[in-house]
Amino acid sequence: WESAGDGLLSEEWSSGQLLWCPCGMLPEPDEPWWVAQPALYIMAFDEAALAPTELEVLVDGAHAFATDIPRAVHPGLGRERWTPAILWDAPARGDVEVVIRWRWG
Image (cartoon, rainbow, N blue to C red):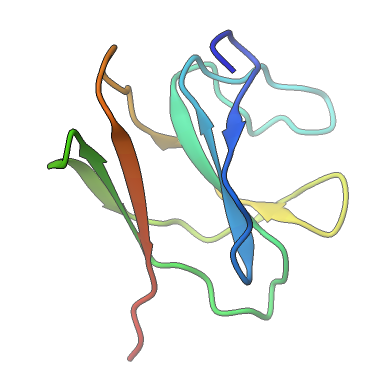
């Protein structure tokens, strides 16, 4: 997952997975939304499920990045939908933890 076009896929949660592409992805004819810059993506399994709303990245336990998660609008090759790229350029070293949150109301 350390070269362009590769990514690291998280464990599944009830409605999706996180894909981290530290070297960017290569756009494909059937998936043109991939971007060449380092990015995070959320893959949603079910459009009807409550989607996560916030993403925070910690590096070595310290806050490094936070953003709202865009809607998963891009169709995948199966039942999944993908968010647009969430651009984040990870540091060269450190323990990375990604926190996904759901906000109600």
